Image (cartoon, rainbow, N blue to C red; front, side):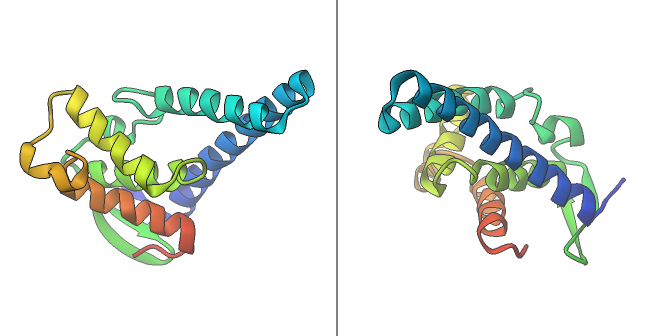
Length: 153
């Protein structure tokens, strides 16, 4: 399977747009109902985070690792360069990119570790990466950097 730049860029962009539009719609509705920007922003953030968590959870609609396979590798073209990435890395890069729309890097990385802890997949020696697999954290950071810089490294 060959995943090209257009597909990955569109996939990431479409989901980032979804998160932004969903947040904006909730914010607007809550602001109209309460007249309070802080309350509206808080409710919009929490509701968007809840929907987002449901989408990216293990087996969720946006869990690319399940669709692509954890250990299957793909020639993946991103911004004209070809990378040999596992389905697991593609999923984590996507998570880092799309989640950066709403969450800080700290929240993203800590949430990934929380999933490992809840799922019983953590190792005590992973404490410095919030108990998430260090390789997953590297891939998540690549997605965060791609979102922030517009360049994939």
